[in-house]
Length: 270
Image (cartoon, rainbow, N blue to C red; front, side, top):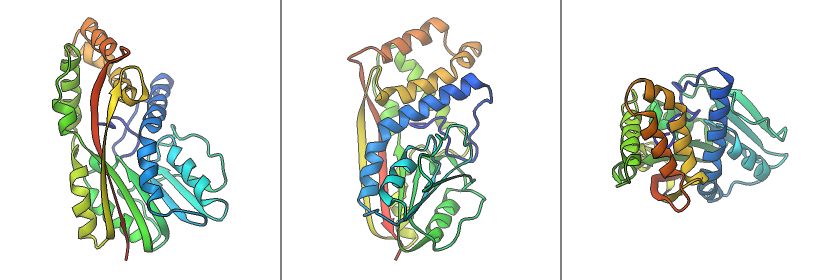
């Protein structure tokens, strides 16, 4: 998730179809949104988004940013809220929002159409990330804004942690980084990628938060661990006792660790 290990934002995203697994993923996406959305909203506000804007949200997850955008653009605007798996998308509260199944790696977008395109924690997961960026820029009208957000996981991965939590954390980071096509540090490449596509008024902002035991700032990561708990035990990677002890450490009040560096880059199409 990565910082978004199982996030519903990439073309290869798969979550088991059983109700309990889907319920857990829905919960995790909502937790992730509560933690990440304030940083995202700051970047979106910096574009000047306002009434009447036509917006595209790629990899909408539970839909929290689409809801925020709908409140800003109002009844004269529109928000196209897309994902490859819509099971976790909350029902929209406004007719301003259109929820649509859409694979950004292959499905078409209208050219020169949107005033604002936002994509978060998607590009790191797809092999076609450069083509996806081309497609998003082409979908912007002249003067429109692209806001892209990705992570740099390096400091997050190597930080010292108490055992057995440290072992669990290193294992999860390694497994996440080994996913096919994954670039967990793509955030560091975003600024150059947008500049290469002729975007102007470029700005990059980084944000690394404190993850606190039992709070949303940490639960997005450890709920992802719970998704694969039984598989880890069955594979003999960790014992049930060690894994449960690690999760207990992570959820102890007063526990802190460094969150991933989130990098938000915005640019305007000339």
